[in-house]
Structure formats: C-alpha cells, structure tokens
Length: 210
Image (cartoon, rainbow, N blue to C red):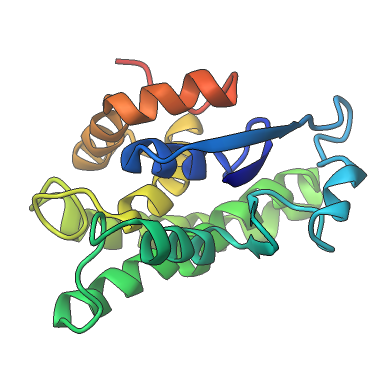
C-alpha cells in the first residue's frame, strides 16, 4: 500500500487528493512543521535525504517530487485515468503543464515569499518579482479563461499539480483580477475527492472561501 509522508499545510495535500480521485487505498504518515520556523521536522530525512514533503513509499520504492509522484501513481495505478495516453500529442501538452507547476510557475511566488523576509532590503527586487508573478498568472489565464481544466473538459494530474500554485496565489490576494482562475480554484476545491483529502490531511489554510 502507498504511504504518503504528509507534512501539514504543504504541497503533499495534492497527493492525498490524487489518491482520492483514483479511489486507491493509502496510508498517511503525518509530520508537523516546527511552530517557530515553519520548517519540516528532521524525521522526514529518514524517508528522503532532502527531508521535504511530499514523498511516498510504495513497498521498497521511495518517490519524491510532486510531478514525479503524480506520474508514478498514474502510470502504475491510474488505468488510463487523469492523463492522456502517452503515445498521443495531447500527452506532451499535459506533460508541459504537469511540470510547469513546480518549475516556471512556482518559482517567482516562492521568491516573493522569501524576499518578504528581507524587509526593506528586498524592496528593490519586489517589482521584478511582481511582474514575473503576473506573467505566470496571465499565462495560465490564457488557457483557463477558455476551458474548465488545463486539458479541456476533464480534470487531469496537471490540474492537481497546478492547484497549489493558484491556491497560494489566491491566499495572498493575487487572483483578484483573474475571475477565471478564481473560479477554477473553487471548482477544484468543490470536488468530492478534494474534500475527502482535506478530512484526511488535516487543517489546510489555502481553501478558498465560497
């Protein structure tokens, strides 16, 4: 059975949601952030050297990185669900979106978070980061202003991976000028498997108010 090494208030919430969408059995091993530093506990390093979440174990195999975990689960257990067939043109579009989430999309938002810790010293960099965050949101909006999900009418693993980026952006008020992205997040969060994952994972402050 898959074990999800789940850190509270983290990106690993997406893996719980993925498993609920597939209705697969799984076990959750919970870890708590340090109340002062908000860092993951050292005990996660016993699972993977980086000591970060998400990470899963499946028998003797350990898989880290959200995109790789989504690929692993869908290819091994998905039975064709939540992804296009690998030998189709749609698969390459899907793969781009899947890896875009933790690549180009998440980077400027994380840099903005860390830059905020610098106070006035970070002020010169902030306009550049703001512009880069807007560029990413504009790019995502080009697709989601035309269709309900990244690949069209149906949810895929790419939507699950991108969800955290937009949830984080929404929590900081960055989606106020993007009604399509706001509705997209609400659409994702309204899904029954998403709601089940919330009950399993514990408190999650990125849920968007209706």
